[in-house]
Length: 603
Image 1 (cartoon, one colour):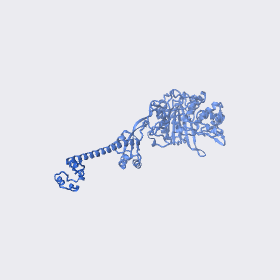
Image 2 (cartoon, one colour):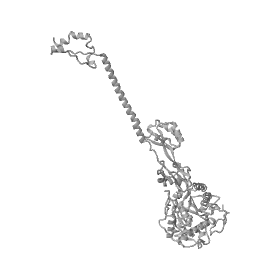
Image 3 (cartoon, one colour):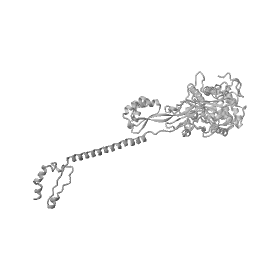
Image 4 (cartoon, one colour):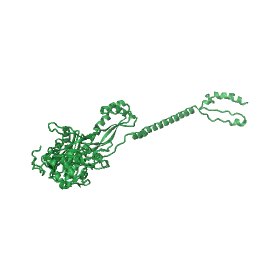
């Protein structure tokens, strides 16, 4: 029997019929059982081909296929779960970190409060809300802009849309929101719009004392006034409050008098200083126009300009008491010598004129009371240029005022001190200083003769006054007598106040112009002090280009604007400062003619 007949014989057919061989094609079976060996046949004939028998197990096939499907399903589930977990981690972790990096920095700066000398709060820090947007998360730019404009109508729509559609990670929309404004925005629920809690500097008194207090930027860095001057202290961790020298009651009185005067005399600007001449403490300092530090951006640069310490002027005849002190200190004359003020005086072909002509000679008291330029010039010429320069330097008029504010202008001086300079400076022309500088210098002449650097910080053991003698006590007393005489008998009568013994001096100067001075543009000033028997407080008022008031005077000189403004200030602040009004006759200057022995005729 050959192999072919064996494979195709009836035996195979029978096996097929009996179901021993599967009718399903072998190549379609998922597996094969091991072949069954026939040892007996192989032993009888080694060359005989052994047949293979494959037994199909349908139940086993179904179970195997099910297991495979389960394994595939489990693998698919695990694979999808891993993808989900990774994606969730990316969203929750990586995106969160990215958002944290791109959000605006949290401001955690603290800043100490500022108080006036009596404990009145001038500046403090509150927690406010700031609104920002993440443009990439804003769904509808146009709709978001429209909704925000309903709440913030002052914003420009085009600028707002530009911010909301930018490629930046975040943009500020509005800072310093009140809780009410924040709630209104929150209730809208705009995607991509969020808030940041930030500290904000707040100034309860608004415009009052704004030039002294100053302001900060959005990051609480001092940018003006005391905020800038004391920035290091105020921004220190756990720093105590800063107490200033100003008395807010005096500040209110000064500011109100300046406001009324500015409207009345229609000046470009005006300023005032109230100084304690015994301690150097600035009790009030104001400049108009001013600004509100709660909203600095809404005001012009001129409003933020402190004319009392930043503007330099030729202040005119308020310089004349300095020339009197110079003559007395150098000993070139005395109070009784008369000078020929009635005669013409020329210096380098410049004719020195007097506004109040005198037909007879004058001594020092009349020279000051009538504000004689000729008489003052003659005193300066006799004293000499070097002595004059030294006196001005000792009074601090050759340098910036040595006090804390950085808003502090240096004087404008002549490059050469010629004989004409000596003369014009004696009556306040040819030298430009700030009103504050002149006030401090005059304080030294009236307080007993000691220069005391001014301060906006309340005096204490850690901040004592450091006086420096510049004139003798006797000279200081003479200057008091002379300036009292100006108010009782001279050009300063409109500054007199019943019961307070006011001393003072007027000053009117033409403003410098191209090639000389403009007689139609004036700067008028009055420096006054009180009380006469114990000078403690000084008031300095300055107007830039005041106008003539019809029906009152045909001139815009200091006696008609700065002097009455000083009177208004003194009337209000004297009771506040504890200066009692004298009911008995006020001591008169020894030079007084007795025009007002009881000051009963004063307005």
